[in-house]
Each structure stands twice: as structure tokens, then as C-alpha cells.
Length: 139
Image (cartoon, rainbow, N blue to C red; front, top):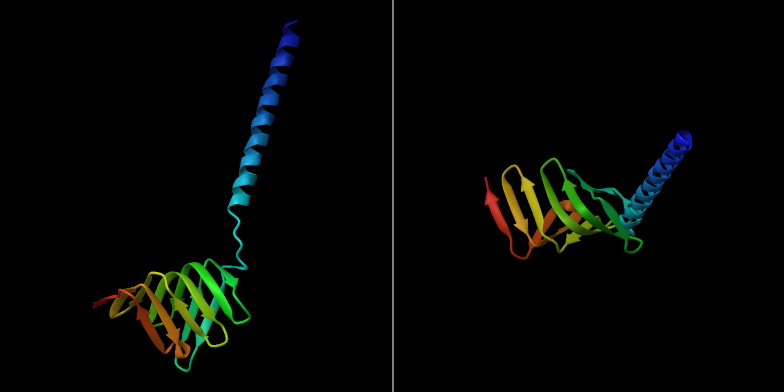
């Protein structure tokens, strides 16, 4: 009788453990599905090339808008030997090698920091225009 009671307790204990494990697995799968985005590219990397320098562009994800344009999102960074720009959304034109953003941006170089409401990079990175309220700190 005691052996039968012990087997029943162990059996119930095993059922509870397996039930908890199955529920944990379902929760993990649901969290992974909720975290999926509709990005076309994960961790995209591009470059703007001109005669004197290269500007490397990275982001967390991107979506193709058309044949030439890509919307880069989340932790977008432009980096060259002379400066870096950080923002959250940029439309990058791969053919023209231009970029434009209407989100808060931060430009940093050895001699200056510029915070703005957006920017436009054209002429293969030789010209950068900052938009909206902009603050410049010269060092």
C-alpha cells in the first residue's frame, strides 16, 4: 500500500513537472513570434563612396522601398574617419548615394557636435544639410 501511494505521488509530481515545462515552451514560442518584424534586411551595411572618403552605414533593420531606395530603421549610424551621425530612420538611395532623415539626429566630429531634427546627405557625402531645430556645440 505504501509503495502504491509512493508511485502515485511520483507520477503526479512528474505530470506537474511536464505540464510546467510545456507551458514554459509555449510562452517562449509566443514571445519569439511577437518579436518578429517585417524587415527585408537585418543588420544592413552600405557605404557612400567619394574621391576622398568612405562613409559606412549600418542599422538594425531595413526595408526596400523601391529598386534604389532602402528605409533603414533603428540604430542607424553613418561613420567615416572624420565624423559619425546617429538617428533612427533614414531613406538611403543606393544609386545616387544620398540619404535623408526626418528623425532626431546627432552629428559628432572631433571639433563639433550637432543635434538636429533631420538631415540630408548628397553629393556622395560631400554635403550634409541639417533640418529643423539644430544645436551646434563647437569644441
